Length: 278
Image (tube, rainbow, N blue to C red; front, side, top):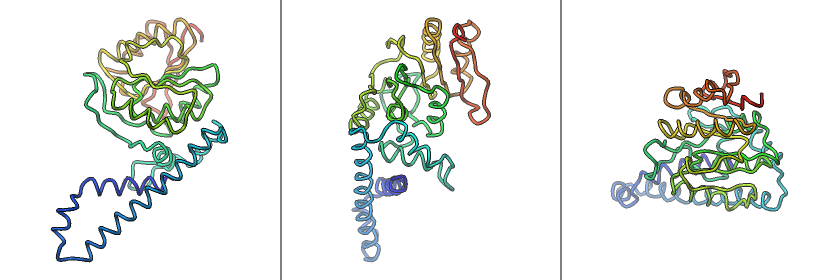
């Protein structure tokens, strides 16, 4: 499925950047080029059909309970996180994005002033979050600024934890819900709201892939600090220290959270836990 997704994206890029009518005018004296374009379009349809069939098979296994969370996680993690030559992608990412039909980067017009362009989380980062937090039946995982839902859907399918994706952008939420409907995961929901208006008190693990900055990041860090004082939580925050990470570090200074040692492979990730329960 990963190879099918790579071809699908290549075909999509070509088709989105070509006007067929103008192309045929340009090559009207070159019938062999017209045949080549027709063959490319036919091949694109075959790849799309194959991708649909592969995704439908996995979705059916998840709906029927034939693919357990552990097996699902093994399936995508087992493909590996080595970047392909000439492509900023890995086999695990290609498989997940092909299954979910989620592109790496998407833009939207309904972002708040302190929101970011949606960047789908890398598979290796999702794997690290799962290893770091080990979410189970008693856990509720929040993906704050969930975008199109790659992280939230993957974690919900890879664990028994309750997963809640929170997103301000309506188009992103609609896309995430459409992407997840095929899998009918009972432990997954998407919340369309400003994160500052959401009750996070039931959360045990929080994931943030630099979804916002400035005053929104400051407010969310304070909210998580309040939750950390009441219960044992883990915050997995990825992003720059300036105007983002500094707000979480402020909660460390205030005694709500403590910062785990930095890891070389994830130098931009801060793993923070409740200081009161250390």
